[in-house]
Image (cartoon, rainbow, N blue to C red):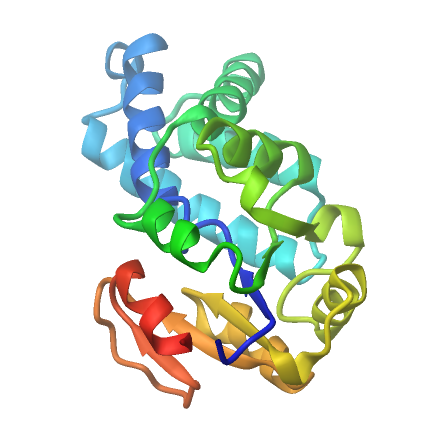
Length: 231
């Protein structure tokens, strides 16, 4: 084994965020009868929401909006796009999303098989920009939590990827050195740049086979490949 420690991102690396979010948004549209309220189609609602949510998450990563602002504004602004100005409705939908999305059991193919193969050969950890209580629910629901020694969230650590401080904090919490550690993630600028800056090797999980603009230590497309890469 090349590494004593492997650190994983959670969303879009182990847990399929897009699939889980999509399922929850479809439930919301039906549960709150949004088509009847004036939303033209399910597809258009989801498209607008994704744009609004991504813009707010970008601001959150830059510390320009708070967690509460992100959660309250993303559905209000989406509904407002369709002429629906209703704070109470937006708040209720936001609460539903936060409650229901994390309990979806959508992992990427071969995630558990990979973790089982690596278990015992190295120590494994999580570094995620997600919110503490939400990420804990995801890992517990999907049976992931027992695989990981250190679970570092941006909310609890007080800093977000790609800030090198969160990677340094994770190394300290795990009792690891960067030169014996690998960071695995789906987002090169967010997951891998900060890790590389403090001395990690990096593995780019790229199931959609997107172009890789920056150099990484490894690139792979299916989780079944990772144990072979690091053995």
